Image (cartoon, rainbow, N blue to C red; front, side, top):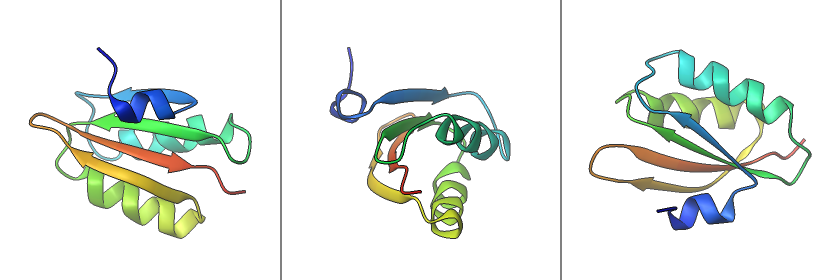
Length: 82
């Protein structure tokens, strides 16, 4: 079953089971492959992932559209802006 976040995304990056700093590295690699305006859904269960990805998006200028906390993971929608 796909979540609403995944249906809105152009790509889904599953970082479940990966820990800092791997989700940020994988997110950066995936965003680099995408076109400006496309949306990436990142799924992560590392407790540090939310803050790490927020900081990364702010530093790189990409836009966080949505952050949803599920019982066992978070999903973050990030729009590539440049």
